[in-house]
Image (cartoon, rainbow, N blue to C red):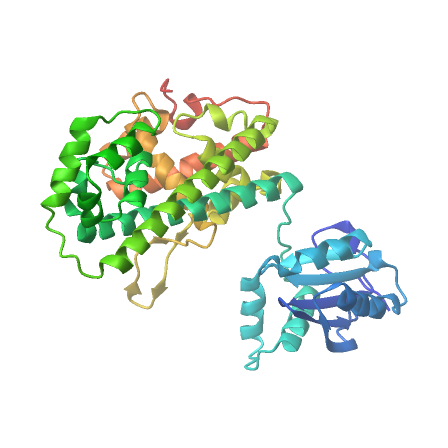
Length: 416
């Protein structure tokens, strides 16, 4: 028996079987139903590995339907299901990724209290059968590459910032006078000094010559004997208590090493992202927007993906989690807030780009911001409006790859 299943494409017009698969790191749970909601294969567990997939595909092969008439739904919860997804896609099955939020809401509406992998598989199948399923986005190879690079870059940038904070905190205990010579103790030369002489006592005992030879080896060599003599003199008179000296010195050396390695990896990622942008004709318009650096452009490309799937501008705004959410109950009215349901990384990049742009001389976004503030809008709200405007402009330029950035379309002015 077959019937039409509500779907996002015509290829599902004659679906004969609907499957739900709940993905786990080690194992998966799957079930098979007919469009009339009768269960063909009760929820079963199989390994999330090649041998487990074969068990699942054997069940599918026993159905009296070709792969093109079998719809399989999965939750887009992690990377654990990516390999299985593409394995089944290559074999011709109709695949649908579902956002965990919609399956969770469906589960709650059904009044189900129990939650197991097998029940989750059945819930996914029921969501597909309900006609309420909204297919998730599967990024292209290029977009997936952008996502890998920019998300790792963001993670490493945060780690580098954390290392810097910890290094500065340790210096306060080990050699508080160090910053009188090196205002920024996390620059390359300062890190080399801290690695070799992680506390004031070690430097005071070593004297000037070892430090002078170390600084001479640094490129470029900005520091001479006066700097060396000043730093050693400060070390001999340091206010450091010397408590936990050995442990803190080891910690400082490790953190300096971690910071240097992280920065080297960030430089590698920067080069990869730059190469990706150079070979991507779709981002040419974005690269001409004042205030949009390579990282911002790459994040926009990664997080927005294929903008052709958005029918309206408000869909782009909602996808970025920048739509307004209002809660009311009876006489109580809550404050209007951003929903923040979309990509946090996207909002973070837009926030930084907006801060840069409103301070740039002649920026169209800056003019737009000043107009909103002049009308009485609070500065924070005006900044959010600039972020939404930036997102709208970015989506437009990604949709119309041949068009260049036009500042007149931002606020109707001739600003750049």
